[in-house]
Length: 450
Image (tube, rainbow, N blue to C red; front, top):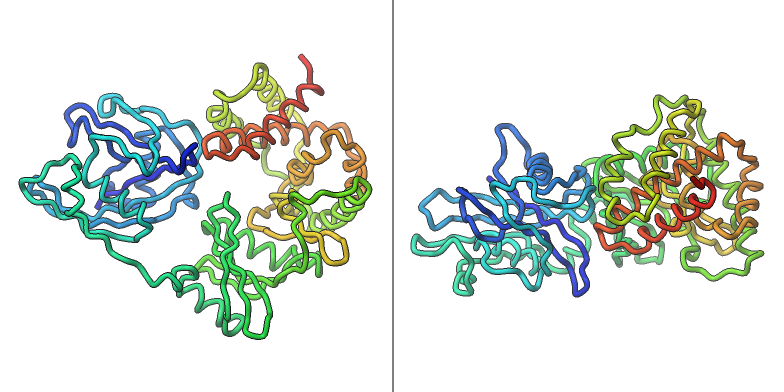
């Protein structure tokens, strides 16, 4: 068995994948191939693709960001035994891909999925052709006289295998069964997933018109966080947040009630109305932060984590940005150890609805955790830039006057979030997150001048 990494990003003309050119005394030397390798003894396949990614490209990948996409049963033309290859898609990582094994690789670049380079390993091309077709598996049995290198004639060696019927593929059978056990028969399921996350969300409608949301998380960590939040903290918000109807640990899925409202993200508001909403949002966040007892923090953010984000963002930082971030990291380490409270974890306009009564509603708790109260304000504080009235309205609603120590903590945490966002946004083609990071660092430069 072997594993193959489809590291994917959005390019100017469509999706792109990272390929490396094999070199030296290795199989298929001189041919383009996906980062790949065999499993070590007793190693699971997800751990293997994460290890191979780090060894061959230098990027770091979290388990929850690995998605299985294609399985290929392959027989090489060399007379070796047939193999099973599993191709994994990854759209989120840290660090910039680079050649880390120059004795085995002499080229690495991004290529459009619809314009793959030559010469390429036929086995790899078979997997990418299957992936591009949106199918789950293929058989690729080569004959002894076939070349290792892909050619148009080799396409006949690839037998694509279909998956479930399209109607079932929209809502996988296992998830439909779970949801119907929770809420009854489903008349319609429409996918409404947010494009940037690995989680998937469907709006479910019952024959009588009732509406719920089904969410399959992109990993056990996010599933555990959201379920825990819904069971312990979110009830303190009452009707201003969804209610957990059912959870399935094996499927890493939840069903929650629907909220009647419109997304605050992208809404054009009168300044007075926006200030009123920020005030109400402050009250709502204060209720969440006070929903369970405070805890003492064990330690500040590790310096190596900050440096890892810097490594990925460095090519895109402006002059002085790195010095500013490192200076704030030193200041952050010197701050007294804070207390932690239940937090939303991703508090920004896109996770807020405006209800029919004009008041804010909170949803999406998959990043909820015990953290500092100031850390939960970082992304929302981006809306306060140039709008001191919004900052005042939120803090008045929260009932908080930030001390100088809390102001510094908020700025430090904003800087760390900014550099993380720049590293992620530039490697994943997410201009909004990237711009928010640059905007935050620009604002901090005006406060912390050399």
